[in-house]
Length: 177
Length: 267
Image 1 (cartoon, each protein chain N blue to C red):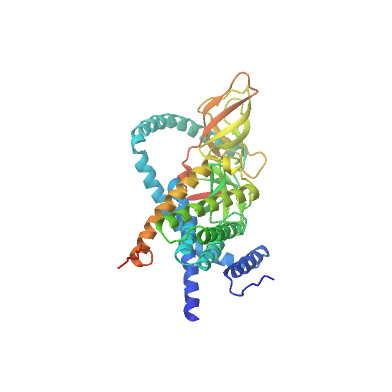
Image 2 (cartoon, rainbow over the protein chains, first blue to last red):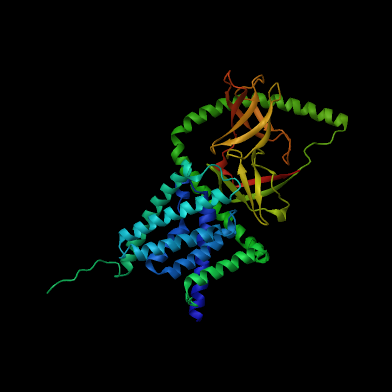
């Protein structure tokens, strides 16, 4: 029980660190670098390598911290991250049957797509200064493209690191003797 | 009948998220949030500073080719400004004497609240707002003007929380300011951001004489922003003869990407 509580507290601080890095540091970078979506990458990583429960934990803690910092309505990130995690879990269980690099890449791609569409939708319908519809904005598509590029790069890196750490992700063959 | 397991992660998430939303919307979380902001602000300032340093380094390395042309242009501009500056000094001296003769109080009786930029946040189409580490607890409210270290107006406050405030930049679409041109006709109008890059001034009557180089300042009309804060200078004028209005493109004199310290003007 004690160990579990320590783990939860550690997770809260870890995701807090990621959220503040996302909010203050990454947002100050040039446009291409600012598209790096750290929290969403952590969420998909935990869904793919751990389980839905971990992904929901990231969505809850990460969403709360980002909502706490942000000027969007409270619940914006909680809701966007939750719906993304939920849909990504359905895709992972229903469509992607193995744990390969390709499935991880596809899952990340779909999660980025879903998250950006949801966020664009929420901003358009709930923000006071939303401007024109998000699908007609060049900035939206450019940002989505950058986010996908960064996340696929992160997929390659994380899969290589995870592959080096565990044998679970390595391909194996059944040989007939 | 649907059975809901007690340790279902979905149920735990929904209960926890619902509780957080409830506590936040009823302001029960406010004391903890405010206390937390106090602890987080220095960290946010530091992280934003690092991000800015990286941005500057990256932008400098990208722009080195243009640097020589820029230096040549600035040397020319500097010489011209020296002449203008000397004329202004003369005028200021004369103004000072006249004011003391008339026992006139200084008009600029507003105070500035110095703030650090802690984040950038998307505000509208192609516009990125800034978030500063001051809020309602420092006396800030929506509509107040924000100036750079040099005293150039960079935007206005659009949203305020207890410990933070969001600024829309003058180059962001929908960030409007009441402005006046320092030309012969003292033309007045409204400025609006253009694609997050420049500022445009619309609805200028065709008969008004405006030209490139005309300084644009805040007019002080309809709001909390005092008159006389520099917005920028006119770089291009669009005046088609078949149009009722003229339009001007204004270039701000500061680079909005490098802002780390700003002041909020409280009249």
